[in-house]
Image 1 (tube, rainbow, N blue to C red):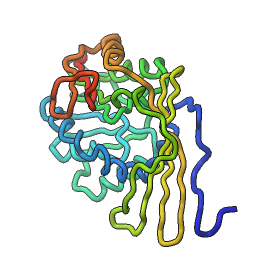
Image 2 (tube, rainbow, N blue to C red):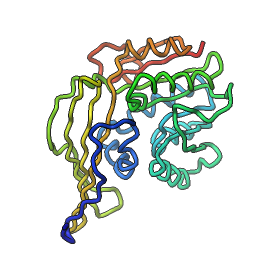
Image 3 (cartoon, rainbow, N blue to C red):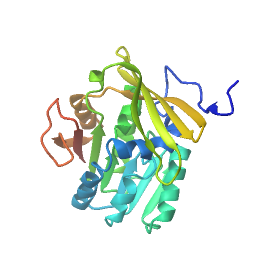
Image 4 (cartoon, rainbow, N blue to C red):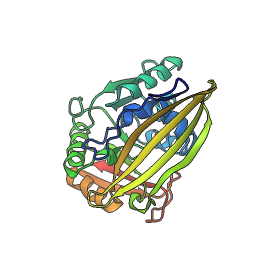
Length: 273
C-alpha cells in the first residue's frame, strides 16, 4: 500500500502495443513541459513558413495540445487540428480559449486513418509533425492514413511529414534521469526517468516513461510507454508516391537544409498529383 507521501498514479505499462496511440492520453500533462526542454519551438517556424508558401486552410494530423496549430493560426491561417486523444485536445482547447484565435482554429477528435472530411477538401497544406506517422505501428495503418490524406486533398496541395530521425540508432538504456525542472506557474517539480527498448523484429522503439511529480513532501509517479515505428526516408517517399503524391523535397533541418542520413531532422514535402 502506497504511503500518503508517495503515490503511483500510472496505468499498467503496455509492453507490446497493438495501437500507437497507447500512452498519449497519459502523456498529455507532460507533453508541453518536455517539449519546451527538447524540440522547443524549433519546428514551429518551419510549419509557419510552409503555410505562408502554400496558403490555407491547413490540416494538422495529431495536433495534440496545439503546440504547432495555434502559432500557425496566429500567422493568419485557418487551421483544423485532429487528434484521437481527448486529454490532449482538452489542453489545446484551454490554450485556444486563452488566445485570440477563436474562429481561426477548429479542433476535431478523430482517427487520422479515417479523416472525417468531405473530398475534395479546401486544405492547401497537411502537416504531420513530430513523428506522428511513426505512431502507426504497421504498414497497413500507414497506407490507410496516406490514402486518407490523399483522398481529401485537391491536386497541387502539399503534405509535409516530419520523421523522428534514425530510431534504430537509439541506444538502449534503463532508468536514466533525462529531464527535470519546475512546472511553470506551479510549485511542482517534475523529473523524467526514461528507458529505451528496441524491438528489431517489429521495427519498434519503445520509450518507457516515468514522470515523477514532487510537491513538498508528496511524490506522485506516472508511468506509461510511447512507441514509434522505424520508417526511413526512402520508405516514406515510396509510400507517398504509391498513395498519389510526388515528393518535391527532402530536408535535413527546419531551415530547409539538404538531407543526409546523419541529419537530426528528416522532413519530406510532397504534392498531391
